[in-house]
Amino acid sequence: MIEPPLLRIGELSRRLGVSEHVLRAWERRYGVLRPVRSAGGFRLYSETDLQRIRRMQAFLSDGLSAAEAARAAVNEERSQPVAPVGPTSGLAAEAATLARALDGYDEPAAQAALDRLFGTLTVETVLRDVLLPYLHELGERWKNGAASVAQEHFASNVIRGRLAGLGRGWGHGQGPQAVLACAPDEQHDIALLAFGVVLNRHGWRIGYLGASTPVDDLVRLAAATHPDLVVVSATRPERLAPLTAQLTRLAGTAPLALAGPGATSELADTVGARLLTGDPVTAAQNVRAR
Ligand code: B12
Figure 1 (tube, helix red, strand yellow):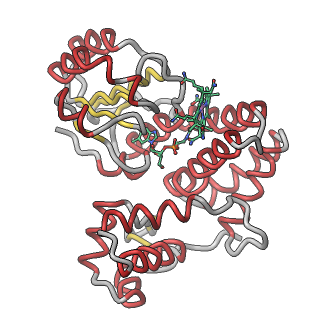
Figure 2 (cartoon, helix red, strand yellow):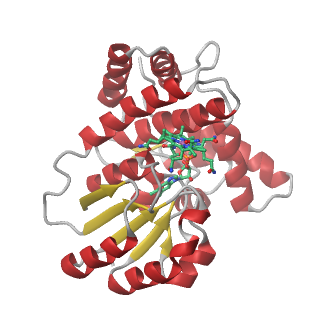
C-alpha cells in the first residue's frame, strides 16, 4: 500500500514548532515542502516533508541561511539511495521496485510499477519524488561506473516515453501558451518534458520542441505565434553563453525563461529573461502568466 499524505499545514506547524506563515514562505521560496492536494483541495504534507524540514532546521542551527539550509536538506535527501534496504514507506518501496525493473531491463515490470505509482499518487509527486530523483541518481551511478550506458539509455527511454504520453493533447485548450525547447546541442529534454506536463496541468497549452532547437527558429516562432512564455533549457552554461545576442532578441519577442543546470541568473539578467529555479515540478507550479 502507498502511504497516504498525512498532515495539514497546522499539524505540520505544530509538530515542527515552525509557524504556518514561515512554512508557507519556505515552500514558496525554496520548494522544500512538496504537498499533494486532498480531494477537497487542501494541501497535505507527508512524513518526508516533515523530515526534510527537520533536516533544514538542523542546518539552520548550524548557522546556514534559510536558502542554504533548504538546499542542503534537499541535497542530503537526494544523495540517499533510491532503494533503501527495508523500505520505510509505500512510496519508497514502489520507487525501489521501479528502480530494480529499470536497472534490470524489465520493461513490463517497470510499466507496472509506473502504473501503480501514477494510479495512487499525483503526477507531481511521482515526477518530483520518484522519477526525477531516480534519473539524477542514475546519472551519478553512470558517472562512477556503477551503471552502464545501456542501463541509462533503457531507463531514460522508458521514463521519457511515459512523460511524452502524459503530454498527449497538451496543445488543446484556451489557457496561456508556453513554448518549450532545449538549447542548441542539448539532448537532455526529460526535465523539460516533466516541466511541460505539470505546466499543462495548471492550465497552460504546451508547444513542445524538445532537444537541440536553434534560437533563431524560436525567435521566428515567437514573432508568429505570440506565446505567453518561451522556456529554453540547458544542462551546461556553455550551451547558452554563446547565444547572448539571439536570446536577447528572443526575450524582446516573447517573455523568456531560462532553466536547467546550465542557466545562470547572470545570463538571465543580461538577456532580459527570468530564471526558473528548483526542480521542474516546483518551477512549473510557480510559473505565472504575464
Ligand atoms: C538521461 C540522461 C541522458 C540522456 C538524455 C535523454 C533525454 N531525452 O533527456 C542522453 C543519453 C541523451 C544523455 C546524453 C549525454 N549526457 Co546525460 N544524463 C542523463 C541523466 C541520467 C538524466 C537527465 C535527467 O533527465 N535528469 C533529471 C533532472 C530533473 O535532474 P537534474 O539534472 O539533477 O536537474 C536538477 C535541476 O538542474 C533542475 N532542472 C534540470 N533541468 C531542468 C529543466 C527545467 C525546465 C527546470 C525548471 C528545472 C530543471 O531540476 C533538477 C532538480 O530537481 C543525467 C543525470 C542527472 N544528474 O540528471 C545525465 C547527465 C545530465 N548527462 C551527462 C553527460 C556528461 C552526458 C553526455 C555528454 C554523455 C556523452 N559522453 O555522450 C551526453 C550529452 C548529450 C547532449 N549533447 O546533450 C552529465 C552532465 C554533466 C555536466 N554538467 O555536463 C550528467 C549530469 C550525468 C553525470 N552525473 O555526469 N544523457
